[in-house]
Amino acid sequence: MDISVVIPTYNEEENIPLLYNRLKSTVSDLGLSHEFIFVNDGSRDRSMQQVRQLSTQDPAVKFVDFSRNFGHQIAVTAGLDHSSGDSVVIIDADLQDPPEVIADLYKKMKEGYEVVYAKRASREGESWLKKWTAKSFYRILGKLTNIKIPVDTGDFRIVDRRVVELLKEMPEQNKYLRGQIAWMGFNQTFISYDRKERYAGETGYNYRKMFRFAIDGVTAFSDIPLKIVSYFGLIVSGFAFVVMIFALYARFILKDYEPGWTSLILSVLFIGGVQMIAIGIIGEYLSRINTNIRNRPLYIVRDSNLTKTE
Ligand code: UDP
Ligand code: MG
Image (cartoon, rainbow, N blue to C red):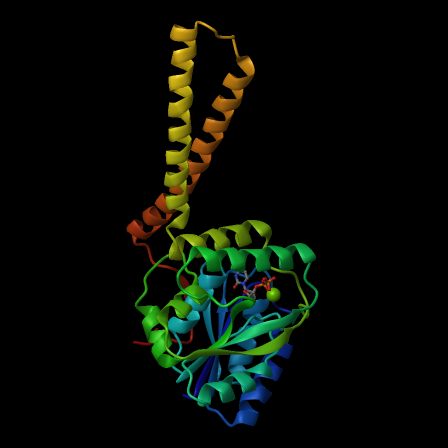
């Protein structure tokens, strides 16, 4: 098998037929033996029926049907687990990532790269808030981590089989695939493309999911937030110590003191806030440790016409 295309799918019924046609003509033009792996991530529409229908017409259409919604990163992981191509493409089902770009990705990879990711030169049809939060986040993440996670890139990319095998050996529950792949090294490069508007349907990534995903990215690759908390604690404690000495001095030596409600309430609120944030940050890490300790399967498959590849 030359190429596997992994397609995480969540409520994409209107996109699937066109996506399939464009994928099919792209890989056929390249003359590659191929499989399209649709991972149905608990869609509540007719996505799964669509995929089943296609699979009866074309044996290259494979599916992994989840028992419920497990999230985009887990859906991609399942696709990789079941793939057998020498190269594997990850692509969104909503046609925001044009399937034709796969040809460029594939050709670039043949120049001798293990990973070619598709960098967004422009993004259509996304709110300024989404673009702005994404942009800022990737720049902050870059500052917090030692590895170079490419900016303005999603998971749309082509990777070599070796990369897939290595990903399979990373059992972490809170996946951040683009980070894990960047972490691996090898020869990685990118091509630019224009990210399109969603063809049909609605985004499955609301701000809550985006926020959790962002925290997954930070906690998976950086301990700096924890360190900032400790440094901040040190600074605040040092300051408090000085104020304490002064307060005692004023009270007992100078005998000059005021009943200072304002300063008291301000410092109580300030320290209270700092402590809550600190506990929250520790909690984010702790909850991820907890999730991993449980050691549950990453996903549950209801039905599939594939088996996991070794
Ligand atoms: N997706 C998924 N599970 C989810 C949310 C999304 O498998 O819980 C899929 C979705 O069908 C699409 C891809 O992940 O193929 C990207 O999602 P979406 O287009 O909703 O995100 P956006 O492009 O708005 O960031
Ligand atoms: Mg999308």
